[in-house]
Image 1 (cartoon, one colour):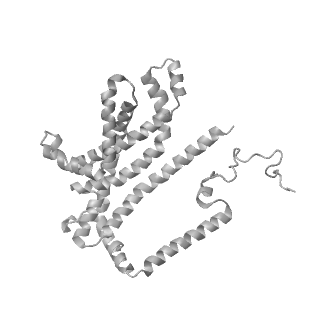
Image 2 (tube, one colour):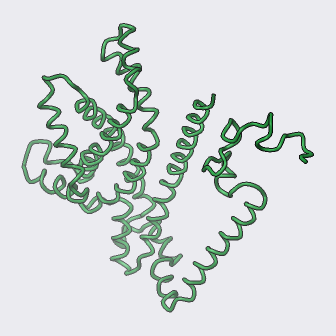
Image 3 (tube, one colour):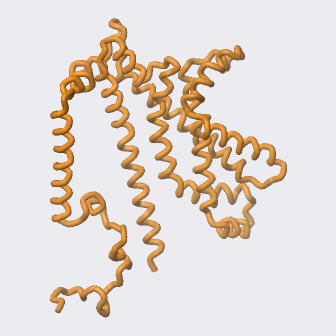
Length: 312
């Protein structure tokens, strides 16, 4: 016999499984950040903490007991070399990895803005049904297929080495950074345009019909009804793409641009130690992990919103 104030599950008056505040039995629904990370409850916290310590301890033990642990520690995790590569010393022939990461950030910001604009234009063109835009739709489809199929590093080589060789006024006399950002924009716009298209297709046709029934022309229905709903749906996948974009700014260094990865490479060639790459990796993690956690937060918030909307 139940002694608590709440009736037992399944009895008359008890909230059914799956109702608001009670996830369905056997489902993956969770209620809160702590439950999501630790499994829920005090026992879940203890078990999660213990298992985490065991796994981390095993990894550390494997590293420390390996025959080449000392050599790897000196080559990749030398505190002295990590600090020297971080602050840099141009007089000795190497640059600061800490200062070079700011170029990666600037390239990321500029590329992100341009990608959002170009990808939206491509998506709208591919979604259009006007007969006069048929040739442009074909070009848009070819653009997406081409740049999604060619590796980014080859696009960077083609833009960074091919465009200067053309000898065109202004266009062929830009810095390597400009060519690298251009390659990033061309390649990522193909991917992001497909994300936009998925968002546009996720808006139900009844929304379009309702907007047109109110007398809104197509461009106003697109601006005020379709796009706001589509953008809300695609924010998490967009942020995932931009996490990859932040990392891929390191590829611009193959053109000679002194960004964080290139600065680390120059240091390793000067002193024959790879700890500079560890510094570059840590800096990229500092940039990408907060964005990844923010993406997870948006995904979880959207999941809760959808579940709340589906609750009768």
